[in-house]
Image 1 (cartoon, rainbow, N blue to C red):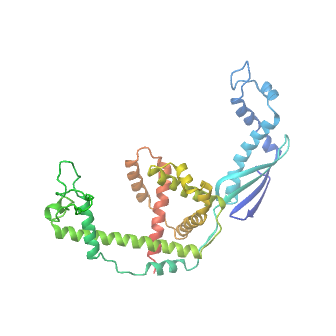
Image 2: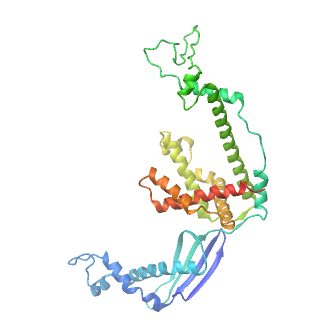
Image 3: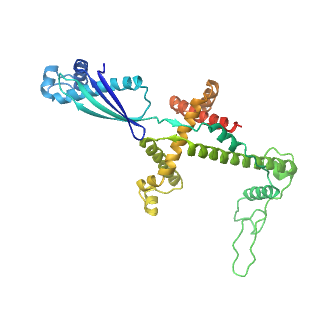
Length: 358
């Protein structure tokens, strides 16, 4: 039982909770606290966790028992406070005990970040629809097709071996000596036999047609991604939301982790990279504060639209994606994977919803 609760809203989407647990309720945790502390208590002549209670109480300071009682009491009280006041906390709460003594009420203060209020613009659908409706003719030009073909032919050059004659079929370009003419490699001939080695193509004409279609599809994908970014940027600019500091900080940490991964994937040590650019991890995180805030804000906007429009993946969609993920990652934690996939699918559906507006 919690006797008194005072809740105060703070800046940066944080709340402060002041609460009091009556002495009789606080004292009810004493027996459990003593038993828990005794499990790890060691004393010469006794087995660990087997020290008689009267001897244990003589050896252990009263404040140690009271602090264990307080931890148990607050752990029980906090979820009830959250539920009663319909809070949506983020991260680990900051707890301060303001009064603790035997036979007295337990008084404490909790400060925690909460999911911020998101105020979307009233016309957010129109904003999205206007951008989504911007049409652009997308084609694959002859020049793009020919350039792609040349790259494919280059990629199919046989590996050079010492037994091949310089300048022969498939030989790489050789840097000439002074006064000599450069020797260019001879690319594979573009004929029906060659394109059949690339995939299920009937002939050169069929290959070019399908290549043109693929180039067009890729350009459409890139254009769609640009529009999605433009929609989110427009909504972000018009949406009111005060982000908790912890959210921005976590996003900065994610960006830093991605940089570390990219650097180490190139075979470099991250510490050496930082030394070369003459920066600390904190410097980089501070440089990314704006980007981190933008990404965090975008995440809350998408969640708000999903809630407002009742958008979520179906159980069939989620189960299908989870099955596919588990098949390719045997050690995956299915509970976490399900949460992750639900978020990804919801984001996708929100963007499709915004793109469908007129």
